[in-house]
Length: 151
Image (cartoon, rainbow, N blue to C red):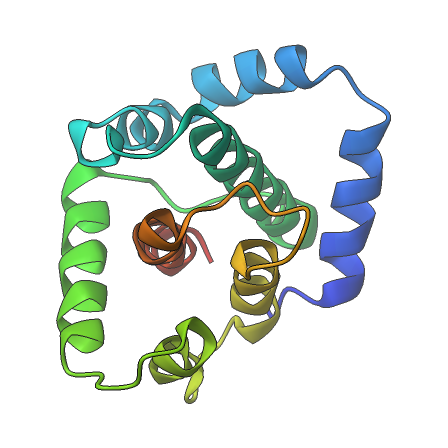
């Protein structure tokens, strides 16, 4: 099922009026594979703000899929690793320099384009952004990999 921008916006709205710490505690119990992935050494170079944003975006992605499908497929470390490896391989062949141009490779015929656009929009450089130039691609690839295994 296609997860629309309307569903994503509804989830963001719901999260604004809830206790984030509680949501993360529930999320951690339900999806330990995703929490372990988020806590992996691969992301040690991210700033604290980037790590918090990544966790928030991951929560929005999962809740959006749950809202549309009600149940996620079984998650595994192996599936996540395979998705991430495939995504890095695709990005390795991109010669563009600008972030949005580099990410175009992931949008071609992608089944969950709105989820991916949500991630991209939250990682672009603007005055309020907490994301560094160095953190942008690893976070995008990680969250694209999460979408690949949940949606």
